[in-house]
Length: 392
Image (cartoon, rainbow, N blue to C red; front, side):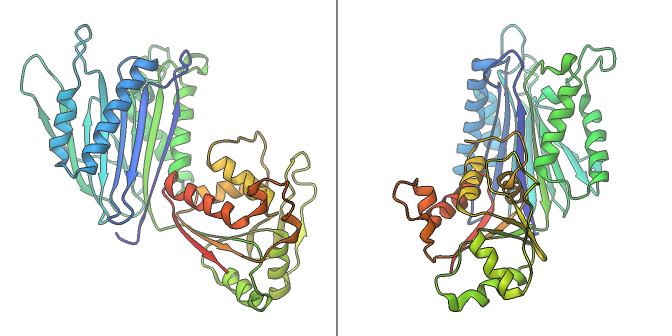
């Protein structure tokens, strides 16, 4: 199990009439122990009030986990800390907490949320649970606790009731999409694409759920998270020529021999690899004619070749959530490859490119090393990727 990577992704669509989602999702990974904690909470109602309740609940769970408080103990504390609505007689927030250890052991606690789905071998598998409650007739709240060991290609899907109740009251879905409908849908998608990533699975479930709603407008917050256990997907991103020309052959060989997806970002870098490996470069001038970014190129044995600094700057903005493109371009292709990878090796050349020494240019265009460090940090902290940064 130590050789497996855990990909965790989340996707959400807020209620159509609200500006703030009433569901909250938080995750934390300990780089040393490999422990991964994920929390999805659904606040009562919608909008700002629900958002505060959900975030409060999720943050409590994360903080308890940080203190290494007993798993069941802190789940009970959270449940008892949340008051019960006097009118509706339900908790002010529901939650699902997933605690995954480096050896693959998984513990899940649910309170009021829809039961999670475990896909094993592409088929939903029922996991027995133990229920704990307050044992008082006035309070029906129960904690459902699950323990199991994950296996390669397992997928854990957990979601708010915006998914299971999608379309509720309609002619086709009078009781909503239900957990069973969601399970059948994702089972079919995995059958079509056995390597379906956690990100694409979460996006597909949320999109399908909102399609069940009248007018395809979300009547509630729709949130889904997916945890996928798999063999790591590896990517090498090389940018910038090596400091010494004598290292050009070594640089090209590092890229050629890499076991995984290979990306070169930078015209000079691509020229070096093409010369050393004796492979031609073909620039696809008309592929993205309307894009403001330089075009992509192709080279035998390399999965993607792009321009350097401008494209990497756009990639960083995409990863940080500061930029969105309506059309596919070099940056969206590169960012997509990075997000779909698990282990990422950034190979950064340190030779100064005289074309980028104009002091009027922004710092992202002036110093390649700074830009690649920021990309590495974003991939580690925001996307929980395992990143190796190497300068040559």
